[in-house]
View (cartoon, rainbow, N blue to C red):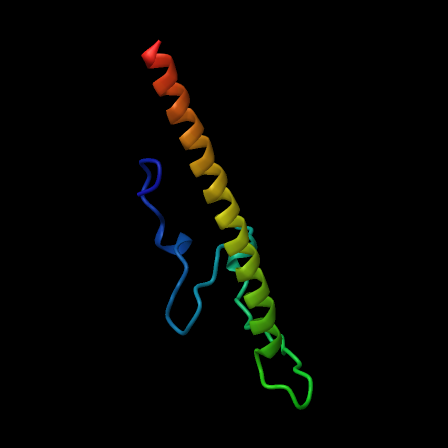
Length: 93
């Protein structure tokens, strides 16, 4: 039933024998297109093992992140110590 009206048997597509055939008045959107597999191929230089360049770059990025986290941690601890000392001075009057 659709909007309170039953479908006519001729309005429903037949699924016997493969893909259903949509009614002629229906326009299909992009989701109705078949999915095609990607055929991208990555080329590696001759003589280098696969992933070597990625490892060096990943290691450099990891080192940068570690240094950044260390700096943020030191700043955070310093601000916390100053804040704690200031609170003690203010509460002592």
